[in-house]
Length: 296
Image 1 (tube, helix red, strand yellow):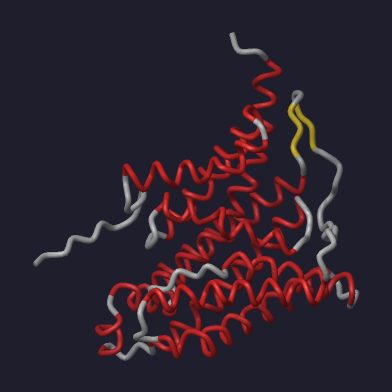
Image 2 (spheres, rainbow, N blue to C red):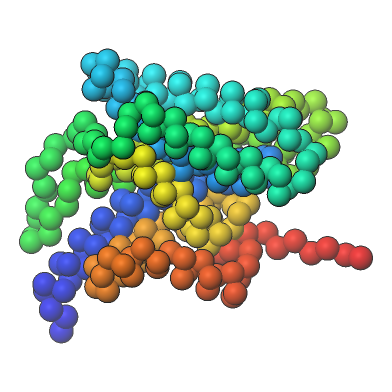
């Protein structure tokens, strides 16, 4: 019979891992949205996430705007940032070698990190709490309201995006462009509009992930490193799969947290990359990725 203390600790690790994994899923979703629409893998996604959280912090703490309106303004601001980023940095790169585009995303990540550090400094900041800090307890199990809120918000957003991509005109247009840009142009779909929309949505999703992460940890420019840690989740699920991004993020979050709880913090930091190496060796296209076969 399993020890009760062991079960309780395992439950705590799974819940906190699920909360972090939900954030990974949102950030991974942003990766996949851009990749599917534009074939660009955005290495600046983590910085967009961190920037969104700092913008929200600016509205709430420095401008004293009520939390609800601060969230709305943050989403609007990050959507504009996404549109401007695509227009200035990536539209001129259409048709250029993929290596050049990747280097632009890396340069953008360094630039955004510098902007964050210059604007808000490098001291750790506490993000304003928007839920109760009193833990919820039942039958000996304890759940943080922040973790629970993160899981619920992420789940609701994932359902909303799933419905958007499946049912809305814009969502169907984005899926069409992801499958075949030339055919989409012939059908009258504005590929340029879809590109801009993809970056806007991805930036908003990243901002939401940054806000949720900051609410359960802290606010610091180094929080953008989560973008690199999400990379294994994207590969695990499949680069071109929205469902894969969601599942991959949750798996990575839970496994990483359990490994950290029982094997130590150092092991936690490398767990996601061990999974990355394993999945690349065993299933390079990920759990839900589409295998491409080239005929010659």
